[in-house]
Length: 419
Image 1 (tube, one colour):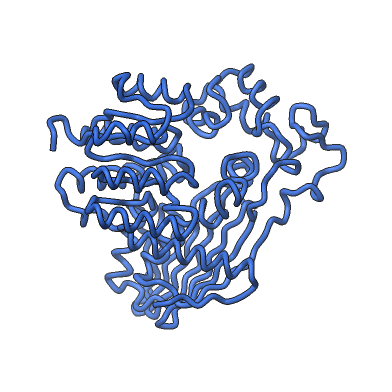
Image 2 (cartoon, rainbow, N blue to C red):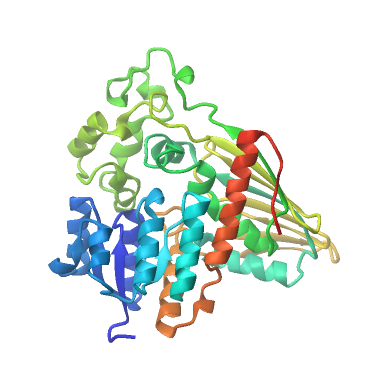
């Protein structure tokens, strides 16, 4: 490895790419040497922050690829539907790759990625950051150590949060299955991957139900207008854009997210201008969204175990909730605390996993963002892919379960998965 650590390249300098780059440099494991980002403001700010030389600052990932292999590893954090082509191209150039989730928005593209990284022999990981948190590590040790005997069933809830759903999945970039992907993929491939990691296996059968129940024109309150700034209903609306975004001004964490997705001008005047002309000020009942706002997924495993997963917009934005039922015990977790009941002794204990940060992207996903960045850079520096607990094959498997669940939901069937 070169002096100064891993030479890191970033394709996509939005919130996720920026976050990984900051952790990589703060850890001392890497230095950022090149960037590709289409947004000129983000591109300039990123280049200035990391001291990227002008000749290695690109507006398009294709121009970056055309420059050849200018680094050791790359973070691919482009928009979801733009994952496959750059990942394949950079694998062919010999880059080790950390790819933001989802792996791809279609199975064909995911297969292309898996084949490309295998052929190139590069280290590859998808950012399933839930696998990497201290909470997950503690939970996995308990399960593997037999703390609750054989795992028989799991209940898992992802509480997206009413305002977060409105921000990202009604007004934001992930509001359409056509331009992005179904919600189960864009938001919850994390969760499906994590559940398979806990079970240590893939399900054999999948069913699913859900839909868009509320954020649509027929649910629009009487008198509501198309934009929040002109709407007489806005003061009492739970999805008010002014109430969400104006208080972010002056708060560094909330300016980083969610406000940076709305505007680069973090002043009251700048926010109001963005809400007046951009998508983040539109009425949630008059936006071009079509992804579900609630969904349940049921999974059955070869040994008879079952799993019930619920994702929903209609919650506070808080930690996921998981209950795990075993033959010898019970676990109840919330992302920080694990409550364990041992059926053999009757004893109950609470384990505080003490994760750094909170559960949001701005807070680093309970330490998952930092941990996956560190693990990836260590794997690259040492040439040891085993330092990453997931690879292209495991990511492809969990994505296939997501696509099976979507087929089940849209066709009203139970989908059998091949072994």
